[in-house]
Length: 336
Figure 1 (cartoon, rainbow, N blue to C red):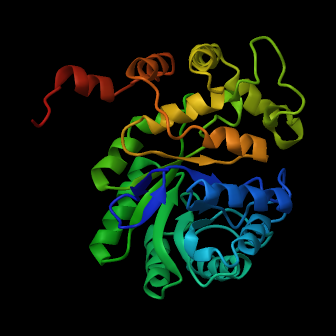
Figure 2 (figure 1 turned 60 degrees about the horizontal axis):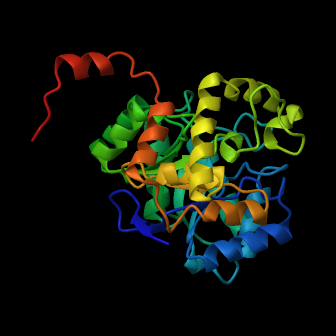
């Protein structure tokens, strides 16, 4: 297991992160215990959860807190705030009221007096960013939070947040959690270059495209009944239609060829591609079972060849679009 500095901080995290969104939902507590134990045994130290994960908001945090009792200092623990946790008008968002209450509740569920990394879950149009950032700064200064990060922000939103933090001397974002996989590469246009320029660490959620890159899906066939994309009651039918494109099946074709030649699973190849991207991208592995976790964790300790990375890059390439192509074609000067 390799360890990276998280962005421009001195915090070292494992090259893969264990996501716990399945805990209490598809994954029972006994299995969750086995998964965290296995993750730690293999050298992992980065665990991510959220205050809204589970059939009831907070379920995942409760399970993680119970399992990590006595192991807390071995783990870099991340949780989030922003998505709804109740029916009230102040049970959602990034106001000072909700953030401070939500963190206290998260700490109680996690059975700890601090979290290492606290992410705001999504941009909040209804709350001034200054209110959010000044509140996060208070939490860092009081020791309840060590570092703060963002999730599901656009580049201009990150720019505004970081500029405000610098202007007022507040502790700013050190990381970004964003959707990133072979089938969702949108962050390469602006977010990844921005994070590289500003020194933010990047964690990739959905690294297997909601399970589409696991190798279980075929052209012209409906999703197998035991798969995530077959769960129409959770609005996954729309997700299947969105993923079942000819482009994405061509990606599966190339994944399959590499999988067969390297004797690796589709998931391992897809995760290895993420690990091969510039900037020490950290995949968040959100497995449902021990079998899935062990398979996914086997993406480490080996690398794709340059030719394999090139083949995957080509088949999954996204439209460059304006103004990126215009700039490249008309003003390609770079600093030597």
